[in-house]
Image 1: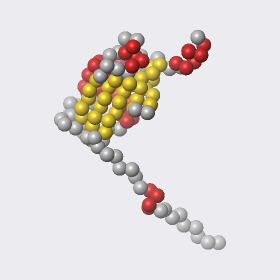
Image 2 (image 1 turned 60 degrees about the horizontal axis):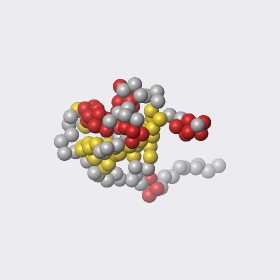
Image 3 (image 1 turned 180 degrees about the vertical axis):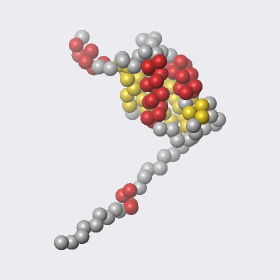
Length: 125
């Protein structure tokens, strides 16, 4: 019986390199339309809680947070995990007591805050 050795081809294990600056977008249009939250409110919460290199308010020139009418844009030159931004968004929703009705979903441009079971409610009406 032959010894079978597992070989790994290093050319197939190439990691994609992330280029900076990197942009993350949050679409808040559904909640701002219903006047549940405002983009400036969400921006102030994210900027007060976001940690860079383990410290609060350590942005410098590395992070720029801007809010427009119905969206929030985060431009960064340092690594920030998407899951960390989703975590901060969920904390914001919990603080506003909206966590039971609103979820953070991924879309083609970034993230959006949407109601749970929105499709089922439209089908019933």
